[in-house]
Length: 142
Image (cartoon, rainbow, N blue to C red; front, side):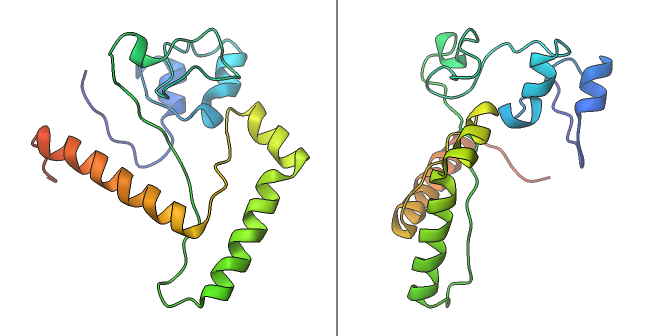
């Protein structure tokens, strides 16, 4: 495979056949999969997706492979703890709302509600995990 970096969306090239394969977020490509315009080969999560249950995980072919995409909300380091706690409570409440949760689930998104401390640990763990991949593969910024 040849890596082709895109500054914007690659879906037009993928849908037209100019690009043959892409690792896309489920939420952004599920409409094309459901519409029959893209064929999903595998998901990169540890377990199969609830919205694409017939699609195998990449780990079923490459044991140990797992790559999750996640998003979070950050704030400047000097933000008062009470502001962080309030933001955390409100964001977690929104993610737990039945309508929001159902909409996200339909896109293959599973909210990971957590405390700010847990989120900090997730960032540290992911940084270490992918840092090791970069070091082991001798990847350098060009």
